[in-house]
Structures are given as structure tokens and as C-alpha cells.
Image (tube, rainbow, N blue to C red; front, side, top):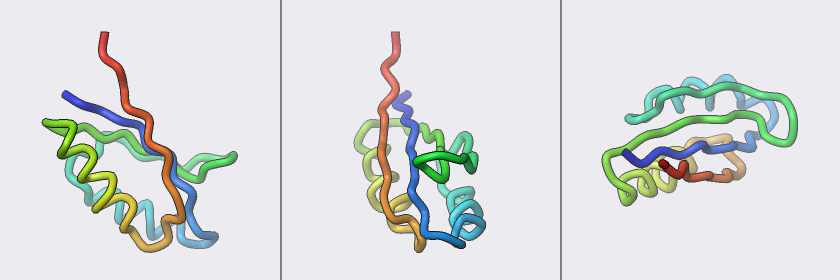
Length: 77
């Protein structure tokens, strides 16, 4: 099953809103607010690579307050 970690940069003050909205995304396994270069890290799984790409592009990146993302696909084996 395809899986990815997504690092998010979020507009200042929008972290609580983004945290709530990302919880609604199908396939979300974990989401944590973090300190450092990025503001949040999320783990998402999907049944296909195309669906995973669609979720990142049309759900995660479209949340108001998300400035940018960096997606790292997990390699199995």
C-alpha cells in the first residue's frame, strides 16, 4: 500500500485550523505539529500511487493556511 510523509509549512496562526482539517482527510494515519523548518508532518496511505498523489495535490495542499509541502514517498523492502 503506497504511503508518504508530508512536511507542511503553515501560515502563522493557522496551525490549529490546518490540524483540524487534515484530520478529515481519508487515508491519514498520523499528523503532528512540529518545531523547526516545517510546522507539521503527516503520514498518509492510499490504495494506489495515483490516489495518493491526488490526495496530496487536491486535499492536503488545498487546505487554507498551507503555504507549501514536501512529500516523501516511503519505499517498501
